[in-house]
Length: 128
Image (cartoon, rainbow, N blue to C red; front, side):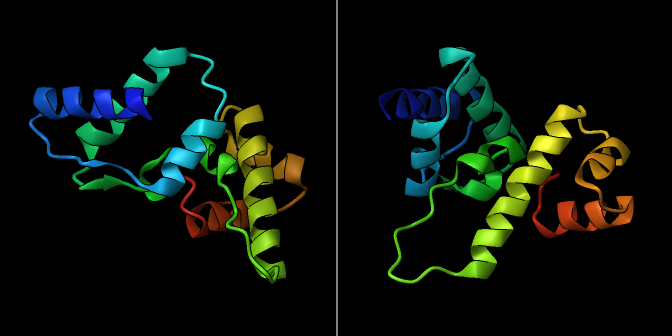
């Protein structure tokens, strides 16, 4: 959390922006993410988001697709089968895309679905 705020403050100066921070959901994702590139990976991610888009708070929709697999489901008293299946579908699509270096035809083959269906789901879940 401290590094995230530090980088946002520095990038606000560098990019002439006024981002206030990240949402709780994004912070939870950041805490779960393994950060193989360490501090530099976090800085590069924030700079990429802040340089392309204008926002007050960085939300989950601003993150690249790979971060959405670390989304924390809020604790609920009831479980939605539809939401759970969608989350699983998103995870599988992202894994197939990463494994094939984002080759849609190969990812569709791995998932055993038509290419057009995969393109529709990528658009539906905003995984571009």
